[in-house]
Length: 90
Image (cartoon, rainbow, N blue to C red; front, side, top):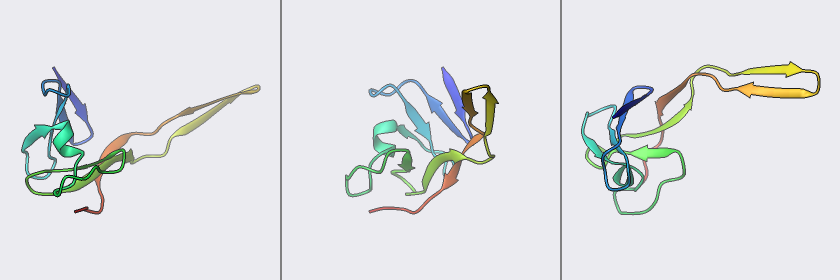
């Protein structure tokens, strides 16, 4: 089963339950490997780094969301999400 997230692809097949494809080099790796720095430290939540080419990216809103108000109720609908480059970490 494949799930599209922005420009990346997530396959539900690795031991942790997911694998990701790097949006830059196209190498598929486990989600656990994408969540660690090259020296083995954890990345901040929501950031990923390719273990092969070390391309760093995170999932963010690329278009603004919408706030709906109805009486006292307020509902926020997030905008379109995408993978955007971020700073690499060691």
